[in-house]
Length: 55
Image (cartoon, rainbow, N blue to C red):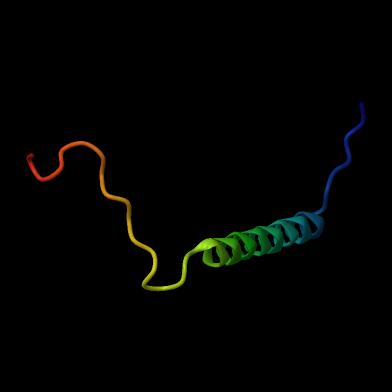
């Protein structure tokens, strides 16, 4: 098996590509979260199960 040595410039270029890809992925996740949320005012948290009003 042979190994190819990357130059510092190649390493920096790859790191930059990875940072950009990560930012793209994070933006896509955020966009999907916003799209999946109910319109403001309609979303209510479910009541916790278990002990209610002490009946």
